[in-house]
Picture 1 (cartoon, rainbow, N blue to C red):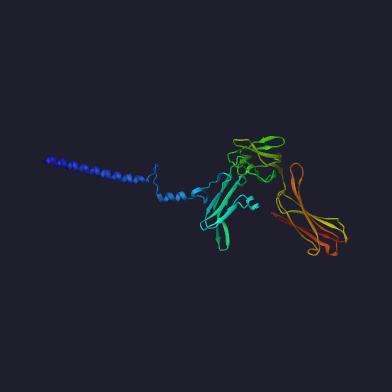
Picture 2: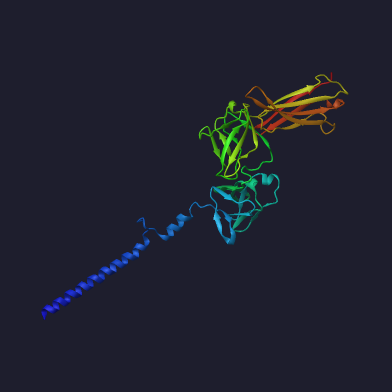
Amino acid sequence: MKLWVVLGMALLWVELQNGSCQQIKRRKDVGQNRIRPGGKRVKVRKLKEVAGKGQTLLTQVLDRGRFLRLGQSTSLTPGRNMELRCKGNSIGWSYPPYLDTFNDSRLSIKQSDKYSQLILTAPSAADTGPYSCWVIVCDGTECERDHDRSYVSYIYFTDKDNLFVPSAFHFKIVYLRPDRPTVVPCRVTDPQAEVSLHREVPPEEITANGTQMTYDPSKGFVLQNPSPEQQGVFYCKAVTKGTPQISTKYQLLYVEVPSGAPLVSLKVSPESVTGGDNVNVTCTVLGEPEGDVSFTWSYPGQDHRPVHIHTSLRLVHRGMSHTTRVSQSVLTVEDLETIDFGNYICKAKNQHGETSVMTNILSK
């Protein structure tokens, strides 16, 4: 009898131990739901914070209310309306500049309480370029761009019939400067296209080596250290699956004109005048080929006597490796009167500064 009691108590003890182990195992199984395959424990709340960090606010609106966050570059189909959104109640936008130049009615921007909307109807290959938005932060009446919340995506409108981004010009001048890289701007609409650079005379292909010359489909060929030997007429060739296509032609000119305020000179013709004569006062500026110059005149008979002012510009090639822009403004006074004699002042202004020069016209 005692033996049966001892055996019963032993069996009961074993059952209790098994139940305890199963309970511990079940608790462990529940805990394993918080462990990812890599063995790292992850809290759900923390995971959401990590997922939202660094994401762009620039999105494309798709059909049926779906949205796509845009990356650094995006390829879209031309002809289909594009709608972009940027979260925020005060948003600024930028887009290919020609849309502003031609006041394109296909582009519209609307601001709501929670987001800003950019819509481009019937986009084409010519609309290829960078599209960006940013949050505008205001302090009272002063507002500025928040650079930490700026987002950009380069959008390709891929068109097999227009591998190069169309241009209004069939021939462009590109200036080579020794102190900065030069870009031959043959941009493409398909980032997968194979693009090469060619010299027209003598005919040869210029190979991009990844250091001195590189290719970026959003910019073109970048010449890191321009030299006089790179002058000439060039074009780009692009190939995908079909017939190769040729870009606009580019005239590369090497320049060595220093940047700075205008270098101005004044000349009076004829040098000796008297009452009743006609006189020309010529204001000449030598400068960078791309540097626009504006002229302002002050003269004795201003607001009382009629004058004619003619402005012109031309490029002057000085030797094989020197190109200068000559800008001129010519002030003409006819049938000189006493009021016309005195000081003539020409003020020339460019992006770097302004220069004023003066000459005096006296009656002989």
